[in-house]
Image (cartoon, rainbow, N blue to C red; front, top):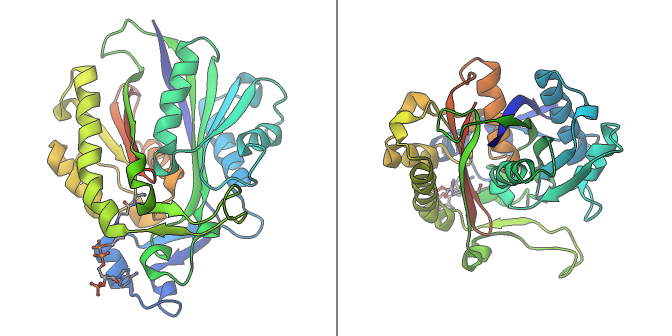
Amino acid sequence: MIRSVVRGTGAALPRRIMKNADFEGMVETSDEWIAQRTGIRQRHIAGDDETTASLGEAAARAALANAGLTPADIDLVVLATSTPNNTFPATAVDIQNRLGMHHGFAFDLQAVCSGFVYAVATADLYIRGGLAKRVLVIGSETFSRILDWSDRSTCVLFGDGAGAVVVEAGEGTGAIADRGVLAASLRSDGTHKDKLFVDGGPSTTGTVGHLRMEGREVFKHAVGMITDVIEATFAQAGITADDLDWFVPHQANKRIIDASAKKLGIAEQKVVVTVDLHGNTSAASVPLALSVAVADGRIKKGDLVLLEAMGGGFTWGAVLVRW
Ligand code: UT7
């Protein structure tokens, strides 16, 4: 059977680093509050010349180099983002053009913080369905552009960045020992749409709008939703938490990550945490964390890796991959 195998990873971060202490003169907050409540210590903030497209392109080029491939080898670009360069065309098409690709196809996928997990599951279906052989899956965001910089309850939480993977068709036997995407579980529920949203858009206000969040409400639902979808993924694959080598969760809050891992019985040393360095980069957070753990040698060929995310909508999901 066809399996969608990860061949390379890459990342890109804006030049400017903003530390927690840099907020102290802007809103009523402290390094101590942010670090204790979220685990965040710093985040990268895009400059005027850095966009979702430029960061996504840089991450894509890094993933291609890591895979030993060129844009000519790719036939589909899927970009997970909620902060596109323009309302349309899709920023994925912009990235396709920046890569010099005039073949294949490209589209954006919008599932907020769950975007990358949805995009990996989507790429897997295109590959297994025979519509693509090699897919660039990118998560790229510039949430700094949609933050209300006077709202301390949200502006300290998010950052900008991009991560990418190259996924390609490989041969598998259908067994859990196969390399590639082994199981996926996706969910959404729009009854929660007002708990985390942007208060603008082309069809309503005609403006871009700002991010609004009832943080405590999101927090309350997060751990239960994350653990449900992971347990469904484990059941699909016939594995338990003990079989995992690495857990790469969405990086929103260290307390959510810790509580989810604990509830699932995933050992602390298997959890990849980058929220301290990047803040919450929405659809970029999982591929950024992945590329850090691949680059430093933690995630190796043959490892069983669980990706998970939860965000606005609500949307949530998990994907199990044998590296
Ligand atoms: O990526 C999508 C998913 N998003 C998330 O996962 C975010 C989920 N939510 C969270 O991570 C947490 O709820 C927050 C980090 C947003 C907030 O942490 P919390 O422990 O839930 O705090 P809280 O909202 O209950 O607020 C506690 C207090 C409040 O003051 P009062 O009402 O108790 O007087 C807030 O006004 O902390 C106050 N506060 C702040 N204080 C200093 C809120 N933001 C700040 C701040 N600095 N930046």
